[in-house]
Image (cartoon, helix red, strand yellow):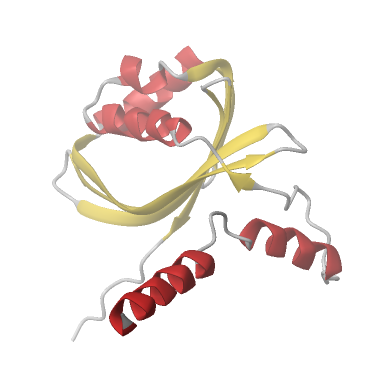
Length: 178
């Protein structure tokens, strides 16, 4: 009898201690309204997790780029697109961007990407979805030179089409010669 009562009490405690929904969203909004930030953001800081189908669109775009398929690379870009990179800015038709990307990819014998992570966010006040990617890209050019860069890409999508592709890079310092 004691074992049955003890088992019943443990089950009750377990059931009542579990919550069906996390309070993290409530804590986030409550905390954000009470904070005084030392800077004003240019963009919204009001975000929530976004639809992961958008991440799949961006990742498929990059996979097709690695394969050298420029038509496939740009198939999910909007007709007019903005592409921002280190010392490069483009705003125009996706076919023109495909030609530029094709020339860049054409100069490489091989290229690979190793992803650390990605995150899809939705900004309800802007009605914007962004996918942020963190990865290492390695390549070998036609002259046999191998190099790499670390990227953080922010990709803005609307209606499952890429509107803005913003690349930021980190260069590694040259190896110290002994």
